[in-house]
Each structure stands twice: as structure tokens, then as C-alpha cells.
Length: 346
Image 1: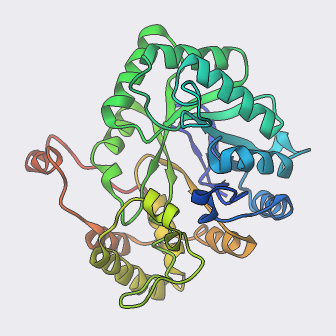
Image 2: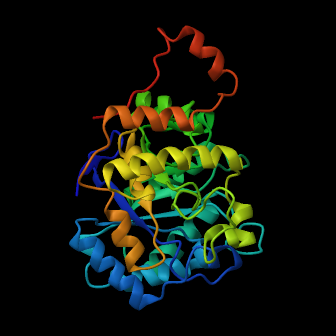
């Protein structure tokens, strides 16, 4: 297992972490992801640790806390061997203070996560989304208190826009508070908007990327084909899950899958393994959150490690997945010599 530095921090993380949105499946949204129980979760943790993957990603809202409970049971007795990443901000109840990033809600959320996981600290604590109603100073001073109390080791954000993240970093620097060392972002061969602003920001400010949904919300599994109905038991067959995910034009998807298909045959790998390997070469990517409904899928995704696409194959995938950038990013391409585009890592 390769380990990479997480942004500008001193923490080393494996290039893959196991996403646990598939643990529980007790709400309409997360039924579409999976429904692993404690026994299956424990077996997955075993497989991960045997492969050198020691990081596990969850959130308080995944199945309304059940994912954290199952993960906590699965890692019981081996807390010293794992890194735990969890999140707060989204709604956990019907009350007016049961959501957001206020000091009140974050304190309740962190204590709730610690209790469900059965641990005394979180290694990477994410703000799951930006809360424009709470002052950034209140959010970051609260997170600073968590770090000083030893309840959180590193802070990160997720689903922020560029100005959300940059404003937060500036406030942290102004007061000497901990900075966001990572941004957990949607990024895949059929979702490359991350490259327009958040990736250059990450390079400039040393903020690592933890990729969520690297297979394009279940679209790059190799099971979705041109002219064929959706296969059963996939995330996209669940209306709640499909509606919550990013839209992808159908013909664009098939163009990307066609390119993946060709390269999968050349490399003797599967479509998802090629798609995951492509992400490993992208600038700022420190970690990719892989999900699995069962042990077989987990082992298969781990097959994306230990080999590399070549430069020509990466260029073909880049070309097949390229889209017209939004303003001002398309305009900046005319001044490319002063706005160099991030290049793949080797």
C-alpha cells in the first residue's frame, strides 16, 4: 500500500480508504448504497488491514449514525491500527440546531460521533458542507478547541467552493488556528469540475484531496452499457440515491466507458480498476475513498493498486472525458503560459 502526505500536514495516509456509506443501509438514501452488518463490516476491515489499508471514512448522517456504530464495532480492539475520518454539518434531527456548523451543533455532533464509534478522538474531522449562516470564525474557533482538547487530530472540509475554502484558510492563518489539510471532493472521469478551481487551490495552499465517489456515483463499474437497461441492485436504480448524485449526460458517459473499455483490455484490468488508477495520477489526490457492498467488490477495487497506466493511456482518458469549462476557466486557457494547468503525477 502506498502512503501519501495529507496536504501540508505531517500525516501519512494510504492512497485508498474504505468508505462506509454501505454500512447499515437504514434510510431510503443509503439503502441504495448497501446494507453491510457488523459481521460483514468486520470482515472488510480485516481485508483492508491485511492489504495495508488502515483508513476508514464515515459520517454522522450515513444511515443516521448507524454507519458509525457499525464501524466502531468492526474496529473494536484495534483502534491503534486505524485512522478514522468522519464528518458533521448536515441534519441529524428536526430541531433548528440539529444542523449546520455552529459551535452548538458541532459540539453535539462530535460527542455523538465519538460515542457511536466508541473512540476518544477522530483523526480527520470534516465539515461535510459549507454553512453560510455561521461565521467562519465561529466554525474554526470551535474546531481549534476540539484539536486543543485532543478530540480531533486534523480538520478537513468537503463540498466547499473555492472561495469557501480560501476564506477559511485565511481566517485560520489570521488567528493561528488549525487549517483544513484536506478537502473531500467529488472527482471522477465523468466529474472533472474539481480540476477547474479546487485542484489549483489545493496545489497553491497545500490542501490534499480525498476523493469521494471515484466511480462517478456508480456509473463506472462497467455494468452500465449503451442501449442496455440499468442493471439491478445498483445505486442508480434507487431513486433516492440516484436523485442525490451528480447528473451525467448519457452519451458522454458512454464515450468515457468506451475509452475505459479499450484500456481495460490493453492492461488486462477491469473498467473500475482503470478508472481508479487514473485518479491516482491526478495532482493533489492524497486518498481515494472506495466503497464496496461486499468483500468481493472490495478485493476487486484493491486490484487498482500495484500497477500504473502509461502516459499515452492517461492522455486518451483525459481526451475522452474532457468537457467545455465554465467561465472564467475557459477564458484562462487563452493565457495558459501564466496559468499553467496541473499535470498528472508520476
